[in-house]
Length: 151
Image (cartoon, rainbow, N blue to C red; front, side, top):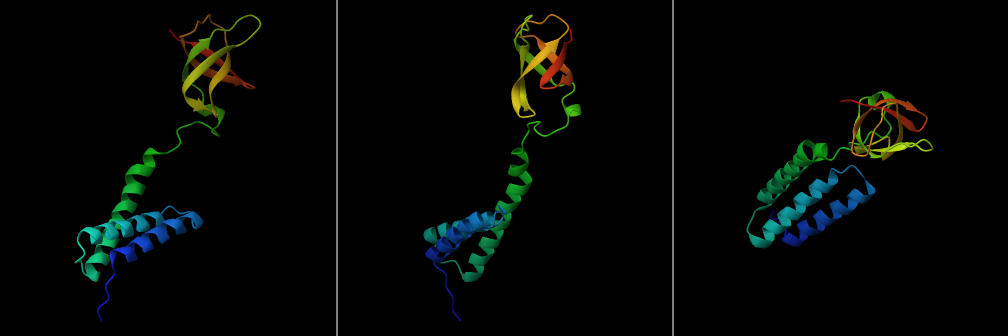
C-alpha cells in the first residue's frame, strides 16, 4: 500500500490542530499543529520524504516544540506581580517616593513590580522623605502602606 501525504495535507492538518486549540485550550495541541506545519514546509521544499520520514519528522518537531514551550519559554512568562498574595509578602518590598507626604495628604510611592495589582500606593512615613528616596514597606493600614526610610 502506497500512501503518500503531500504538503497540503500537512498544511490542513496543522491548521486544523491550531484551530482545535481555540476550542480545547490546553496549549499542547498547538505545538502538534506547528509540527505539522513544519512538515508541510519541509515537503514543499523537498517533496521526496517517505511517509515514515514525514511521521518521524512530525513527532520529533512536535516533541521539540512542546519541550521548548514547557521547559524554556513558559517559565519565563510567569506573572511576577504580587496580586493576590498575602500582606506578609509585601513586608520589606522597596519602592521610590514619587510624591512626598504633606500635612493634608499622603505621599505616593512607586514599586518596580506591581504589589497587589498596583505599582503606585499612598503611604505614611514617620521620617521625613522627599521624592526619589528609597523606602521599605513595614506594614499596611487599609489601602495605605506604612513605610520606613533606611539609611
